[in-house]
Every structure is written in C-alpha cells, then in structure tokens.
Image (cartoon, rainbow, N blue to C red; front, side, top):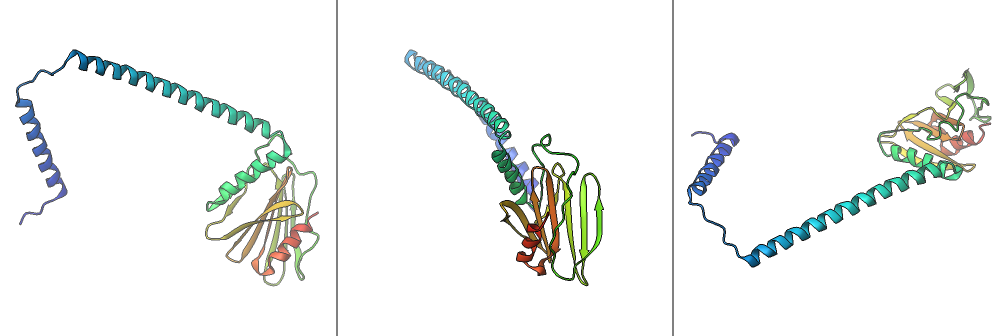
Length: 223
C-alpha cells in the first residue's frame, strides 16, 4: 500500500483547486447588473470610507506624536529632581531583576564622579572573621575577610559602573537599611546585597548561614 505523505496531499489539493479555477474561467462572461441608484450608493460608501480612514489615521498619528513628546519632556524634567531620579534608578533595577540577571546603570552619568574620593568599609563583622585582603584604586575598593570555613567580600565602585547579578531560581527581595533600598539575593548558600547611592555602588557577599539579621548589621555598619 502506497504511503500518503503530506506533500502528496498538498499536491492533490492544488490539482483540485486548479481544476475548479479552470471551470470558472471557461464560463462565459456576464456583464454586471447595475442601476443608477446602486451606483450612487456605492460611490457614497466609498467616499465615506475614505474620509473616515483618513480622519482616523491622522488623529492616531497626532495622538502618538503628542504622547511621545510628552513622555520625553516628562522624563527629561524628572531627572533633574532627586526624588524622581531615584525612582527611575529603582525602576531600572527592578525591571532587570525579574530576569535571570540584571544590570544597574546610572541614568545620571554626568551627575556622578568617575573616581572614588571617600573609601568605605564595614566596621562590624561576625566573630572570627579576619581581614585577608584590601585592594584600592581610583574606581574600586575591595575587602576580603575569612574564617575557617567561609568568606565575606565587600566592594565599593563608582555608580557609573554596571553590575550583573544572577537571580535565576533564587530568592530575590528588597529591604531598607537606614532609608536606603538594598537588593538582596540568596542563592546556593551565598547571600548577596547591592545598594546604590548617587556616588557609589556597594556589594556585599557573605554566606547565607550568617543570617539576614547579621548581613543587614554589616551593611548598617559601613562607614
């Protein structure tokens, strides 16, 4: 028995369709049946349709252009206001935070400094953590503390830097520390905290087992 394939069915349908078209083409032509009244109605409908379509398209374009210009002006003006600028900053971070990773990019790059003028570090750490490393330069400040089993790392960077954070299949949430919004991510035993000021971006990496309370205490002690 011959197997019927998709291409075979498609070809058969095309043959039937062509045969039907040939039948219609062979029929004698029939002049259209019209009347003056019918012709006038058709012309009125055509004119009305053209007027309606043109009016709609013109209005839609005007509305679209007006909305775009208004949004651009609102965005430009809002960035000159500190409170609104911080809201835009927060919105960008939260939007990217819904994906497997996100970036923090400062929308006010001309507002911030490209170099570090004040170096910060935590003044409190859990017991038995010893400072092992500190690297400072004009754009970053890094500390590393260790105990017998774990590490705590602290980074300070200028806020025009971009940071990637893997949030896929993790516990991602936000908290406030001294009125500063802190982004927390708990994944695979590592607790990560990121917070932003107009001048700097801070990152803290510590083992999840120290607990959220101690992690927030470290952040609060940064000075």
